[in-house]
Each structure stands twice: as C-alpha cells, then as structure tokens.
Length: 112
Length: 116
Image (tube, each protein chain N blue to C red):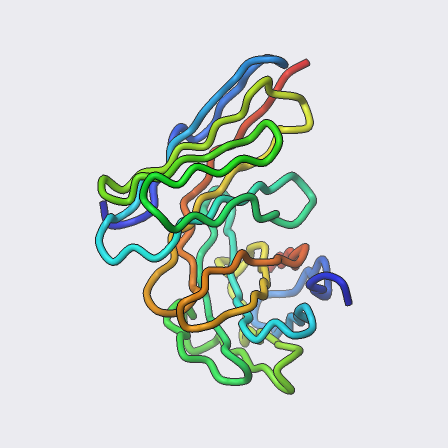
C-alpha cells in the first residue's frame, strides 16, 4: 500500500446502527495515525492520534483501534446518531515532521 | 484567537488573476500546514511551515503557487495567474510540534476558491 486508503467511500446507516470503517496505510516507517471528523460547512475536527501497535482509543460512542504491523486502523461508531453524519478522515504521519498524508475519507450518513 | 482563522471564506476570481489566501494560526503553534481539496478528491498536502521557514513545500503544484509565513504567525498562500483547476477548498491547519511528538491539527474553516 503506497497511500492511505479508506473504505468504504460512503456509508448509509439507520439511527441506532453500529458501524465501522477501515483505514489502510504503509506499515513501514510508521510514526502516527490520526482520525478526523469533517462535518459539512465546518472545519475538520481531530478525534484520535494513535501511535502504538494495539492502541485502542475511545471518545464517547466512537472508538478506534490500530495495527501498525499490518497497516490498518478501524473506526467504530456505536449506536449511530444523525449528528454523526460527516466525512471521517484518517491520516498517516509522514516522516520526521508532523506532516500528515490523508485518505480520501469515508462519508457517513445516518438516517433518522 | 481561540481557533485557526482563514480569510476570505469564499473567493470567486477570473482565470488569470492572482489571489491571496490568509491563515491566522493558533497562538503558540509553531507548525502551520496548507492543504486543498478539489471536488471529489481527498485532502492534498501543499506546504508545511516550521516557524517562518518551509522545510517541505513538495505539494505545491506549480511555480504559480507560493506561500510565506511571518512572525511565526500569519501565513499567506498566493496563487498567480489562476486556472480553473485551482478551484478547491484551501484549508490551513496549525499544530504544536516537537521532533518526536505527535499532535493533532486544528483546522481553519477553509477558503472556497472558484476560478471562472
């Protein structure tokens, strides 16, 4: 994997459903993996910064796991709500700087 | 200010004109980044500032694009002789940074540039 890849590209779920999506990235020279939420007409908002293999982070109903050896991270949303509707971006830190390379995002729509 | 401020929020310009986009980062954030998102695409890195210097400008798409930062604060991204393919949302972000630290970005709300 040369770039950061996210799947699925978009997702429609019903309110109350739990859902998850995937971020895949090159496993070599790993520094950190970031997750952001980007709601329409707003700024992207940082959710998690993950650095260690096996890391699991949680913020309310949202959690994320990290596998640096195989190069993937999962984001989980439990009991989706309409306000969770947003594009979820993951990004890999590239090299010695805090420069991030972003995936194209997963667009989530939660229907009441 | 409390957040990252970008101006203008929207800009419509004629092809061939120059535009200047401004970013005011969070006070104390030494790192500043410019990204853009063209329609249907992901966030594309443009340039990174550490203080007033730009150690990585590898994402600038052509020599029509330039950026500067002064006073370890405000940054301006200038696009000369704009082309239609420059139409995008230009996002600025800032962060704390150390050699080994990993810090999340705080993004501005972006400038939507439309070249007609």
